[in-house]
Amino acid sequence: MAQSAPKYLTRNEVLTRYGIGNTTLYRWIGDEEIRFPKPVQLGARCVRFLESALEQWEEKRQTEAA
Figure 1 (cartoon, rainbow, N blue to C red):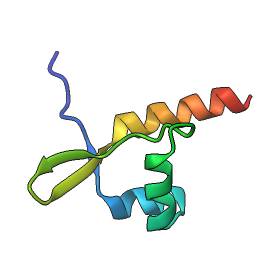
Figure 2 (figure 1 turned 30 degrees about the horizontal axis):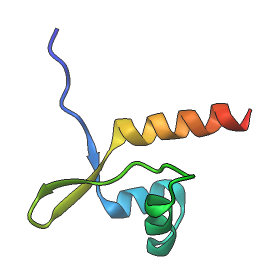
Figure 3 (figure 1 turned 60 degrees about the horizontal axis):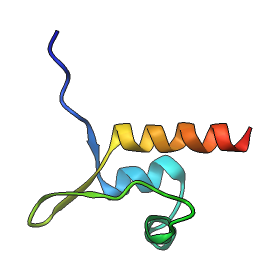
Figure 4 (figure 1 turned 180 degrees about the vertical axis):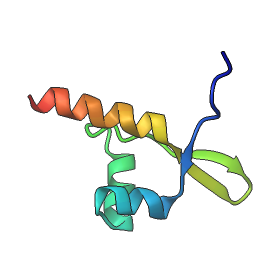
């Protein structure tokens, strides 16, 4: 069975997904306690967030909160 290609989200898609602004996003990325997934450099001026990494982060946060 062929695996589907990984899906990447833009910064704006991530901001919308979590209802946050740029400052909060970059604070989350830099905060070792939050452990927000780091963006992936796909090209010289192309940075994206791996959707599966975001989903794993969300699941982990939910289990820690329970």
